[in-house]
Image (tube, rainbow, N blue to C red; front, top):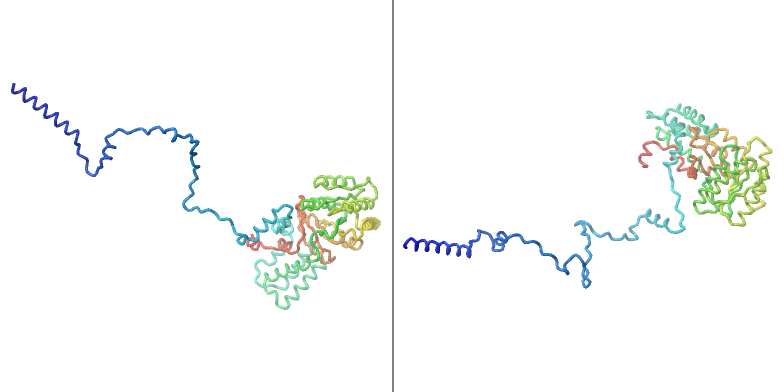
Length: 415
């Protein structure tokens, strides 16, 4: 019996120990009760959201839209004040207004590219005369003379430039190559700075009559001018005055359709004066901005043909007093000194108001422009530097001289 009692006592003692152990479990040092429960209790699944907290928005309380968080350093950009705008910004805003005409941008780099043949010919040969020299020998004038004459500058113009250079050398005003080069540039600018510039529109209509020998590009030049001024918002009318060449009329009609300009024409072989008269009267009645009159190409040495074109000019004057307002002589730059001879005879017969020099990109002897301006005192109005309409450039003496005489180091600084 005694062993049974002992066994019962042992069992009761073990049960009591287990019972009290489960009631009071000592906490680990540094652990709170919450942490202990979290450690001992099984992980609970997140409760399913109630209808109010679910992804579907409540009708009573729509959830606020979330805004993207801005980076810590980002600040809201304040609108610029009027006084903070640069002149370029103001000009840009002005040009974007309805009906505003954007200002023509000077493009020295584009002209320089068009003059690449002349720069690698005429200008490169001039530059080579000064390479490696620290002082100027008066004998260099003979070398400059040779380069200028072989670049179609012309005898008269070359001698005048050399005379001024020689005078300054004698006065010790040109002591180094840089000074001589600067003087050459100044001479070119002086020669080209005549009262020229592009077409003006003092009258409505303004009538421009195009003249020149065969093959210089009169009809194409008219098309390019029409494209330019129609693009500037001017109304343009074209007169097909070359009635002896059907291809010229067809070409002008193509340009007319391209720019939305009417073409006044007559029958093949009809009187060009009659076409010019009709076109002038129509332009006057319709208040056209610009009338461009094409004429037949003619040899400048043939007096009867020159007399005929004089009659066309008189016919235009009968249709509108004071017209034509411009007589533009179109010359092919690749003709060199022959172009100068053409210009002299056309000036004597018609007294042109300006020159359009085409195909200047196709010659290494672009010095012809200096000879024409110096000897005939006729201003250049436009220069042709390619086949595209935009390659007919308005002529500005300062940018032309910069494009022609600019050295590589100056070009790099300008860029």
